[in-house]
Image (tube, rainbow, N blue to C red; front, side, top):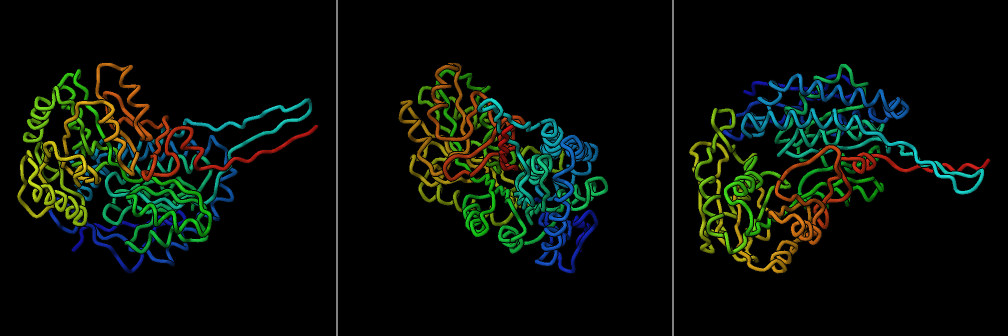
Length: 469
């Protein structure tokens, strides 16, 4: 029997249905909660509540909206112990990483609340001017993924509500608990209908994207699903923000401090057991340091502690769900079938979706582990000798989310960064997002912008008023 039941938030009050989804702990396989499996009726109610609330919310002052967005962040921070423990149980990540995600969400909401979008006034001739202001779009349907369910929900809630939109938010059916709980915690002070949080299975997402009462869709997930979301949005010309997959390359130059850089690349590839859209998915290492760098990474891989994230000392948790576990195992099997040399860390026995951290030693650039996004704890290392060659390899992908360059020569690294066909590049660091910096994917890694002023503007439409005196 499930030990916990959580409610949805529709129009500011608790909501549930007769049908429920089971939520399982990926470290044990045990059912830990039952959450509502919303259908068309509940979605219609949530969208109707959001549309009604939009009438007043769009005219609420920017300062009042900012205060409520910031208070959501404060509430998440004040309940961080409860929320992070719940997140570890449903997502699997170690307790310290769960706490980091919760506090990141709180920080994102509070920081985004400090942004503004002032009107732009331009005088075109004596007595003539135009004023461009940024107005809210309407009802936003937000769909967040299972790898960072709280942080990535906050990335959507903050700019959408601040800009004057209302929202219907659906967390992944694999990780709905913590987001639903946040809805329970904030419903007393967020005006009714402004933030509706519903849960449901695979059928609910397509119903949301096709709903005629939705004006914008904000989706984070796979590229394949993102294409289906875009197709559904086309019928109503819905506005879109799509943050999709990445096959992010790291380029490690021969002048780096090897041990220090290996530790940073290790984290960038294996944090959250590799289940990060901007994780390093393939690492190109200069031949002059390849063997030494590989061995430094290998020491980190074999010393990692894989297991139940709620247990002390665990550094890496399970794959979050059975479907992804199967996909990553399939890629591992492909590496084995081709005879690639692999360095594997600790294997964990048990019923959970555990995989050992794994390095693949110099597979061919055209191999599956290099060409596909693995989204799991397996990293290919590819030897290179020529800068032009490695840039061509890094750019040889349909995806263009992020990349990293590691070098003491900052000028040379900046030139390489300019040549990478990605929306985001880090030099000598990784995974360093900011609520004040635009985050966008190129190619098939996304559409639109999140975070920063540009991300805030993505939840608005420009409206220009021409004035002649």
